[in-house]
Length: 150
Image 1 (spheres, helix red, strand yellow):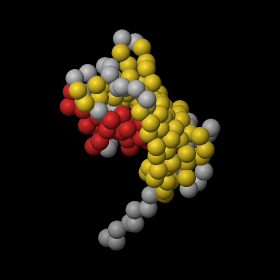
Image 2 (tube, one colour; image 1 turned 120 degrees about the vertical axis):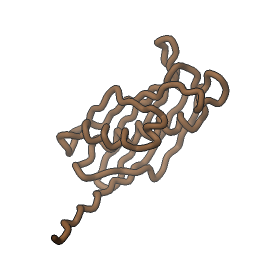
Image 3 (tube, rainbow, N blue to C red; image 1 turned 45 degrees about the horizontal axis):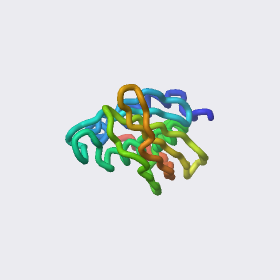
């Protein structure tokens, strides 16, 4: 896949990490490539279901950020996307020191992009699949700022 924006990695990371939810979750990108991303979310007691196990909401958020970021990596400069549909299947507990979410694009088009994400619980260097997501992104061009009259 070929990115439409030569600065896609820088722009994508800046956009995602400026979001309050990403900051609260302490998301970090560990890989950004055209149509693919990997991000991590550290275990936080405030997001836990019970001690040592993350609740479903941060699992969903990690998957959604990964899928939408993968989709966003192919957008032209000045474009963004938003989730319009997704299905998350939790297949195991999120008990570990962190989550790793890997997103990838299945089909990209101008208006809609279909992406997927897998979320793994990480403990002692081992990854265990805990969730999988299929998502659709709506791609949108940002309105151009109008120059102000002096």
